[in-house]
Image: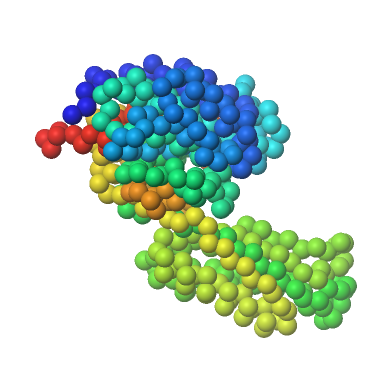
Amino acid sequence: MTTLPTDIRQLAAEARNDAVQWRRHLHRHPEVSFEEVETSQYVHDVLESFGGLEVSRPTKTSVVARLNPGAERVVALRADIDALPIIEQSGLDFASANPGAMHACGHDGHTAMLLAAARILLDMREDLPGEVRFLFQHAEELPPGGARDMVAAGVMDGVQAVLACHLFSGLDTGKVSIVPGPFLANTDTFAIKIVGRGGHAALPHEVIDPIAIGAQVVTNLQHVVSRVTDPIASVVVSVTRFGGDGPADNIVPEAVTLGGTVRTFDPLVRIRTQQAMEQIVRGVVEAHGATCEFHYEEGYASVQNDREISAVVARAIREVVGEDAQASTGPLMGGDDFSAFQALAPGAYFFVGARNADEGATYPHHHPRFTVDEDAMPIGISLLVRTAIDLLSPPPADR
């Protein structure tokens, strides 16, 4: 049985200042998906500065560190490192210095927390009955995502359990959510091009108006949710792009394009939704004498939390954070390519509350004024450390 430190929360609190410094540096220097060159180098250098870790670069912009490599039991901890293509409006002293890029989802905090967890666990290396593998993943925000590249590079070889956490502005600081079973959705994208016949806006009878047809397509796509899908199932169809190429206000364009996302949990519902969407789109378009191109691309698979590992996380929440800390968000329709790691080993993904009105940390994820309450970071650090220990060395049955 591993000799545990008396107070992991205290160790995490002592790591707070360094974690905040790392987080603010990353926030100041964000890089978007697949372009995390300086970010990954920074992570690499910090890990190397600890000493005692085997640090490698499995892909161009990702980093892996191994503690006690070669052990029979292996637990992996993952943090995403990429930013979003957003112009920051937070007003923070350490706001983005890279125009058009922003850490608007908390990945800077995730990276800093995992760095801190690595250093704490490194100090316990003699007592750890196995290997902890730290995965700093690129390109979580942009399909096809970076997780599958890391998996292909072998980062999950020998791993028996994988864990990730996400700072979440939907929960107050001090609250944590772990949901067994389905947690995050399948996230797919679609693109539609409707081709009609352009012409003068004063002569609508001589044109085939792709804008009017596109508007009906948008409306009718909601029938996939309300009239095609079992009400018990979960489906979200969101049209997020609608554009025409008309050069002037008095010209009906030749074509319009639409695009958006589809979110589901059930694999069969995922397939049926795609089929229903294409049938509806083609039916509406052809009924008005136009033609269309319909493209559907499957994205990240659903994140499914292993129930046994979720129970270990839940116990850690009670023992490290407090009996009243756990709050259930329920399954959410957001997506994450953490599921690619779960395809190789059972895992769990949990939310750490980071909302604090006094700190201005109330904006939703992907908002240009998004930020996190940095007091949430020691909570995430302590849970990563404690859960890694418990997964390597299951506690006594009477704990």
